[in-house]
Image (cartoon, rainbow, N blue to C red; front, side, top):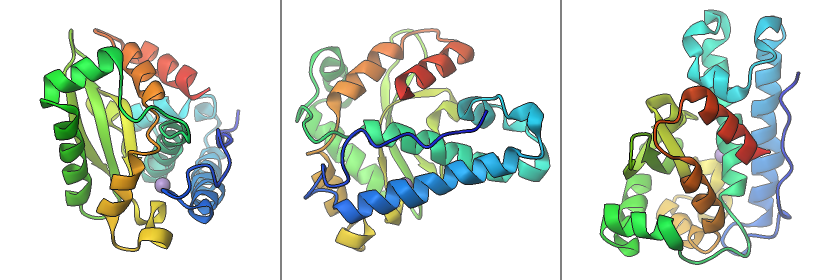
Length: 222
Ligand code: MN3
């Protein structure tokens, strides 16, 4: 079984002017595609791992042969995170979250504005390449938190379930915004897919075991 590059759920130009078409094209067709290619290539010599999902590989790196462990970490992570990322954006999304997710954001951050401020600050402070996430703790009544990860690590590696993510690697914004990461992040709220975030929030319930977590993650990516 080979890992497959998912199609973008909208056109390259769909998120203009907040994300330009050329950036989307390169980001999906070159960057994400290369993570898929590199992951498949790394697994060529290890057929016993070819049936494993990218999520399983990322969460069981200690079982992955040392010769390909770093490559798998970077590229399985890159594949998973970008698959989530395309779905975390929409040209026609809600501008603000609704329902249970909105209530949880108000409860755990004080207000939606405070959440956005903290999210932006975390993204701005992250040194180098990485991701900023809204996550939910996997405990009963799990609290929402903002975390960042370096490279292509995913919060599931810390037992935190991803609700929403923004890519703050320079390749996500450099063509249009150059060094102005905050400006990119600010415009990104206009294309945030709060419907998808709400769906993931519903799935991030209490006491979820990793196997089910993986199935949920894969189902949401399908
Ligand atoms: Mn990226």
